[in-house]
Length: 162
Image: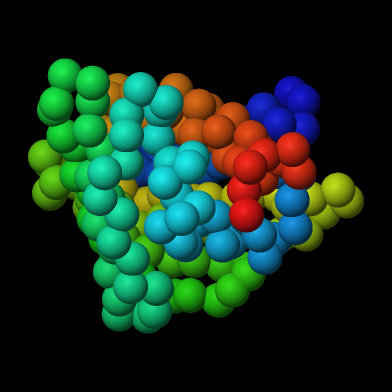
């Protein structure tokens, strides 16, 4: 594994997924990329999907909603609520795909300073093994890999980021 590979752990007997990924940027900048519409529009999701709605009320008790649009016009909507907001170290939020509302998960994301950047860690707790497995089966890993590649590009000093 290189520093920028996605390290994904999926225990067979728990409805969780754990991920680690290094990003070459300080935690405050990475946290901002995760929590602002400006940042998320540049990296969240696979390249072939456009993030057409990105609403964020970043506070405990606040919520978010994202809608992605495919080239053929299909839309995929996601929403959740913020349970903990501790910049730039930690976010805890719910996450639901609106096409499968019974699969709401709880994501805990950490942003740890490491030499040369930030180690992002996340733990996603699903209500059941079945909902976790459905999340995985619908392209989650490939989407995460591509999203983090896009995040690297957006956070690169050579990007056109303001």
